[in-house]
Image (cartoon, rainbow, N blue to C red; front, side, top):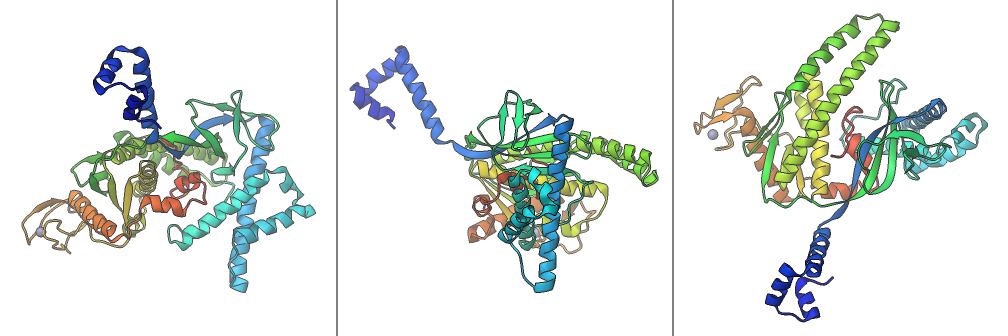
Length: 444
Ligand SMILES: [Zn+2]
C-alpha cells in the first residue's frame, strides 16, 4: 500500500506543494481521506458477534422446532448417560467421535428413524455441547453436566447454512422461512445460529456473525476489580459501579412472585399461571441487568488495558443461598464473561486470580493480614500502619497487585491465549454457557 510520502514521489510534488494541494484540490482531498480509511482499516480485526431476535414460527414450524428441541435434548441426555455408564462399567472415557459414530449407527435403526427429520448438524452440535460440558468440568470450571429437562429453556444450534432472506430466517429442514423481527442491522457474515424457546413460551434466535471490528485504543492503564452485593464493581482507581436501583425494585417483585408460587398447590392450573408470571418478571430483570452489565464492561475495557479479577469459583467459597446472592453470582458470571470476550475483541488482558487470596483482609499498604475482619466490617484501620481502609477499595488494590504479579510470572489467564485454546468451539458457546441459561450474552 502506498503511504503519503510514496504518493509524493509518485506524483513528484514537494511537501509544501502537497500541503497546498490538500487544502485546495478536491481530488487530493478525496485521495487523502481514502488513504485515512485504509490506514484505519489496518487496525481492524474480525470478531464474532451475536445478535438476538424474536422469531414467530407458524404452527407447523412450531412442531418441527419442538422436534428439534426434543431430539437434540435426547441426543445430549442419551450420550451423557452412555458416557457415565461406560465409565462406571469399563473405566473408559468416551469422546465426541465415539458418540458421533454411535449416533450415525443409531439413526439407521428403525426405532430411531425419527431422528432423520432433524438437521443432522444440530444433533452433532448437541454432542459437541456435551463434550464442552465435560471438558469444562475436567478443567474445574463448572459442575458435572446435568441431564437436560424439557421444563428448562429449550435450545438447539444450527452450525451452518443459516441465512436471512426477504425478512425471514432460513434454516435447513424448514421448507419456509420463519418470521423474524430484525430490530437492529445485522453486520458481517452469518456463521451459525441458536434457536431457543424461553420458559415464557417466546421463540428467539441468536445469530453469530463474523464482523470487522476496530479495537479500542491502548490506555496503558491497569486496574483491579472487586465485586460485591451492594456494588457491582469497585475499581482500584476509585471508580465504583453500583448495582442499579431498577434492578433492586424488580428483585422485590421477583421475591414476591416467588413467594406466591410457593403457596400454590403442585400441579394446579394456578401454579402454572404463576410460574409463567414469575418467568416474565425474571426475563425483565435479566434484560435490565444485561444492558447494564454491557455498559459497565465496555467502559472498563475501553479505559484499561489490564483488568485483574478474582476467579468466581474462589468467590463462591463464601456463597450463601439467598436470592440476592444467587442473582449476584449469575450477574458476576455474565459480567466476567463479557469482560473476557470484550478484552479479546480489543486486544486487552483479563488476569484471573485463581487461588485463594485474602484480598479483603490484606492491608494494601503494609501487607498486614487482619484475621479479625468480618463480612460486616465495611471499614477498618490497619493496626500496623494506621491506614484506614474502605473494605472493597482495599480489596481491589490487592487484586490488582496480585494480578500484576501473576502476569509478570506469566501464569495469568491471558484472554487471547484462552481464545486460542477454545478455538475449536463456536464462540457463542464460550460466551453463553458459562453462566446461567438466562444470562445469554448478546454482543453490544
Ligand atoms: Zn497496614
